[in-house]
Length: 85
Image 1 (cartoon, rainbow, N blue to C red):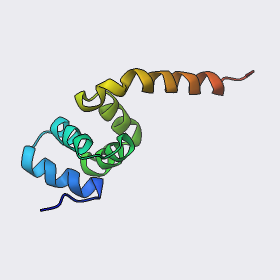
Image 2 (tube, helix red, strand yellow):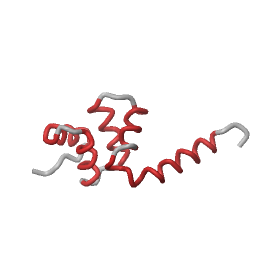
Image 3 (cartoon, one colour):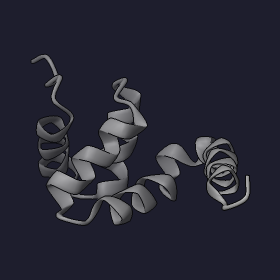
Image 4 (cartoon, helix red, strand yellow):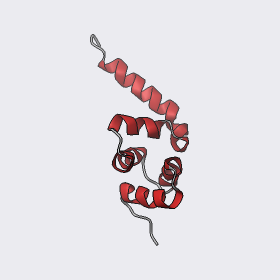
């Protein structure tokens, strides 16, 4: 059976199979879904806000190797958005 190309649908399948969201996120990444797709699936399947979903994915073991780069990006965006820049 070919995995679904829709991240939310695939997340539902994985959640039924494994029962833990951290495992779902790991499998989504292994299957080639992007971090943005994982965030979207988290919003749709876990029922949390976008901000909460970003935090869940950002802090998950599945994406921990991306955390330093993501932190630098967010910091640079905050600095660029400061008044007087």
